[in-house]
Image 1: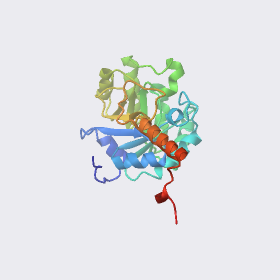
Image 2: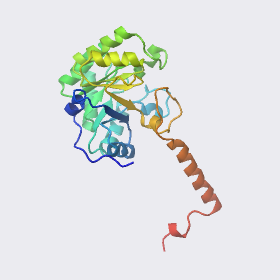
Image 3: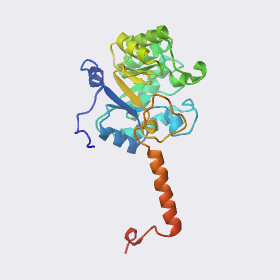
Length: 267
């Protein structure tokens, strides 16, 4: 399958305009240079440098231990690779909860690291933080529904089915100035209702086909992570299995003395 032709850079206004153009948005997470370069060349609309790296990169059971300094490091790695897609960076747990002023300081750090926009979790109770960051001229992507940073309050990574507070959260984040909205872990019908209730693009993850776009974690869609396998994930490849086979073959050849062969050496 050939790659799409080169395209002009994706900006925040163009990302937001996709909804009025009836154009679906494809978003993936990436956390380092090589993955970001591949995703960018493949034609994604945006890369989310997500705090999900706490699980798929750092090996934690949740995203809660990830720090702002660690997020900035990964944003810098991604920014060095990207030529055209939008870069959105997660504000990690504890980096915006204290006050709107703290949210602005944290967002500034990620923008200076190379992000084009930031994402923060929460609806009505975080609307002031969203508004403050937007007033600082930093684009914000909201996040409602299953918010992983609230895992303890929610009692785990559980589907959120209560429509009324979810719709209120979505409207509050939009009113605060968010240019788009991640909707996670809700029934498909409710994901469609959220999309109809707001005027900005919704990016679903486990929220059904009624959203304006979709996001998946890099390691999930490529079959690289087995720590958690949500129902909503489609694995487009099994690169974990392929990597294990390749490394096993390498180990066999090294131990048998067949690698390196003559063609792998210098004269």
